[in-house]
Image (tube, helix red, strand yellow):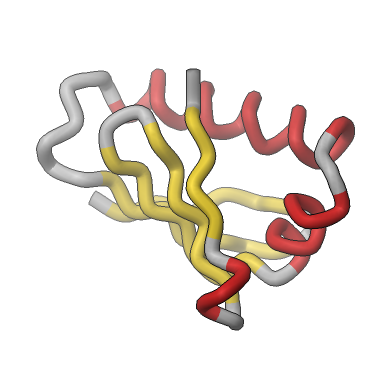
Length: 79
């Protein structure tokens, strides 16, 4: 399933794995809370990743942030 979120004035597509056992609405709330926390309290590397994110893939309890540079791609735990 695919949806979009607004992240720092950018529309970012979010893809959900069909194997997720949690409802999509709960995963979106967790993702939003985690990203907001990382924007305000994150280290420089995480903020750099969030500035260049092009898509997010939610697999289980992890969010994989895909960026322009593959080396900047990051996995965040939603819990």
